[in-house]
Length: 348
Image (cartoon, rainbow, N blue to C red):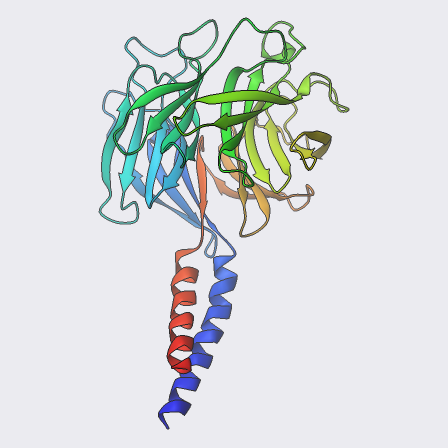
């Protein structure tokens, strides 16, 4: 009798797990709404958003950007272009984001100036923040490495203004190469061999960033967008990795492009995913649970599109997301765990 009851429980749990798996596959979007100094969540299952945390900013010294999660804690960049002296930039740490959130400052002020993109390198225990203080020659431009354990800050990669083009110039965002824990992809708005006036006249560049155990980084150019089959691409701002492909957003063409890499990780080809979206697409993330690209635009929306450019959809309106991070749907994870527990009991 007890065996039959446990079997029924297991069946119910498995059925629940099937539903949970579908929910799990949605993925929820954690994002910053920069003008409002908030961290929010878009719940895919219900299509609703809610504020998880609001920063206290009476002196307007906070401008949120990239966000990532490490060991259950969230880290958020903040900073302004053309920063004040000393800099008001910071990296905030948020514990227990989903209830009784505790905020602390991991690091602040120089050399942090205007940290935008963020990624974590476990080998050095450092957050990698793309430091872009704005137009003109600025100190400490490049990539800043901040150790999570104690907030130690170092310049992991310093932009060099002297090398020949293409080079690293005016970085925006960074994402990890999922096939190599010590390598990352970063995009710079400028630095291509096309070097005309203004951002419109300068080619963007895709770089490979390699980081060692000390948090020191080197860069290698993967692709110069100065002369693509679709014309010059001159203001790349977002980057996401999907297998051997790298996707980028470009503000001026309103497009998303796919850069295919060969087995050695070198450039193979470039293709257009979608263009003429307008509204200045920027922050870009890959949602592994839906196999879609999620991106923000300057018309205050969060959108998604399939990897082949079909199925464009606006998910959230009225927000300005300079940073996003995709998490599994919490309810799906819990139900999957329940199913596993029931099946384990049945086997005993």
